[in-house]
Amino acid sequence: TGPRATYGHFPPPMTDEARSRLRRARAAYLMPDATPDRVFAAETRDGPLADLAATQTLRAELSDWLKKTGVRRLVDAGCGTFHWLAHADLDMLDCYIGCDILPEVIDANQRLHGHRGNVLFALKDVVSSPLPACDAILCRNLLYRMPADDVLETIMNFRASGARWLIASMLPGSHEPG
Image (cartoon, rainbow, N blue to C red; front, side, top):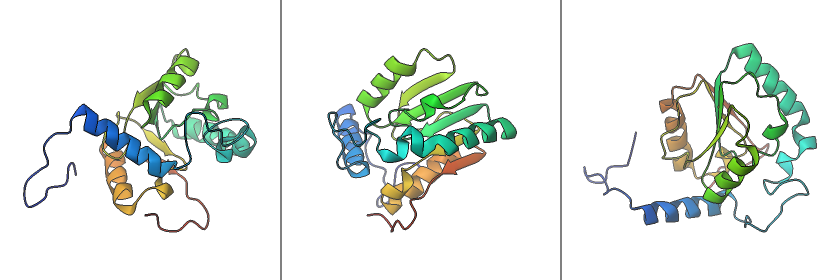
């Protein structure tokens, strides 16, 4: 776990500028057509899979499942705009923490949804940033877009959070990424 050692040596710590470049590079391959002014669908820049109609059943079933399993702390890895989850019942949670790699997404989410008492947003690279301790991690429409090495590191990072549950999605018919 942690940084990869090359020839027995770890790389030097990243500068803030290098970390920012890495975030932008990862965001570029996760959402290659995304720009701040690009709208993928009428409802959200997250794309049609985040529309309310597309998530109607998921929202109800996720809320029921969270109640049934007693999950109190949920980390949303790759939360995007929080569009569809803003319309889900999350009242059973002590804390929802939405994590995204783009600072402007986190800032907008905090402005729009930060008033909810149990909802927080954090700038995190889910591949390498330590995640908050939680009961479950929601990772929707993200892993299948990543290169295989990043998927493995992300799963190890999820495991380090202490989460008991991973709620992840796959795109039917998707092929192995990058």
